[in-house]
Length: 138
Image 1 (spheres, rainbow, N blue to C red):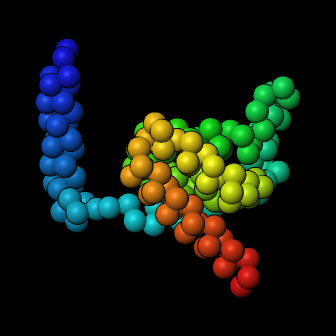
Image 2: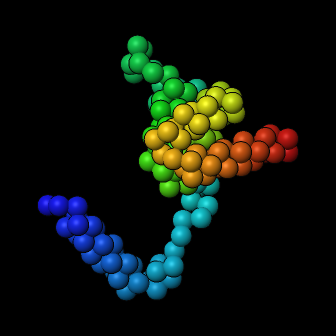
């Protein structure tokens, strides 16, 4: 299968999904997942460490490092997954990542994801860090 065959197959699959969504509920045709990231609460740092950290693999990566790797992957692939980036950023802050550390990861990934991805991820990071700072002040 060459790339144009893959692109055709993907386009057909997406059109079928859109047709099915319109048939089930016409409002789904215009659905965008704005605010989707707000549906997922930020886990406490100790729980993150148990789930994502080295609780099951004592010699493995800690939660903060795993989340940094996740952020790097999301930015390197173009920073298209806004809800997932916001969720990861919130969890990074909870895991103790400083804003400067997060920015450094994003800057590094600009070499792979490009400047638009870097700019988008930095905007999201600024928003998440500002948002969580405001919540802490309230």
